[in-house]
Image (cartoon, rainbow over all chains, first blue to last red; front, top):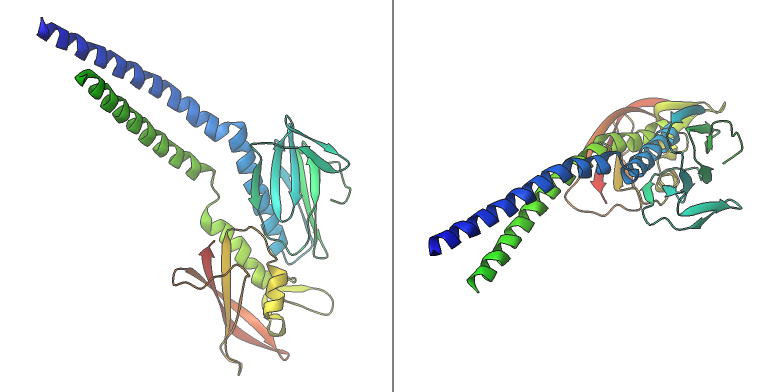
Length: 147
Length: 146
């Protein structure tokens, strides 16, 4: 009778462990996919890419213009204080060239540039970075206003 | 009672296993989305000798000679302009060693540089313009994570 109870306990533990292992095994690829391709990863990677582009452009000895293809529909790109910030439009909006609201998952990455760069771009698809006479301008395609 | 103790240990063991698997997973994912360290460093260092706003020689016509450092511009004041205060995660300490000129090595550093024995070093061969003459030189850049 006692042996049967022990066997029953072991079966219960085994079933619980197998269920846990299956749940984890099924969840891990999803978590990995969310982390690697999800909104937060996209924002983080894009902020870093843009910061790297700005660092390279600042180092250029010549006047230069570069275009960077981005898929940032649904985001607001803010470049200020030597930082690239990406806000989700679900949480913030632009009013009088100012960001209103707060994105709790805002991605930010620093860069270093001699020129002061200030820019707020709504849903940029193609980023245009121009260096002219030592000054850096960041605009989006079909928007040639000074940043 | 003994059953309770067993279940507590069981849950702890399963919890630790999940945490370890999740950490390994996160480590590999972070590795995939991080800019390679050397790439970011090299783009920042290259401006020292290629940007007219840093130490690169700029002639009267306004043309910047990348790879040629203007000896007169190699000052701490210029370094502060070249690397203004920012949250960039690197600090640099650059030393210019001119081989032929009668000048001792000059050093400049970023504002966030703190002396400590741990650093990486990058050495670049550059030309230096001093008193109208060109000299061969080495630009030694110490790099530190901040």
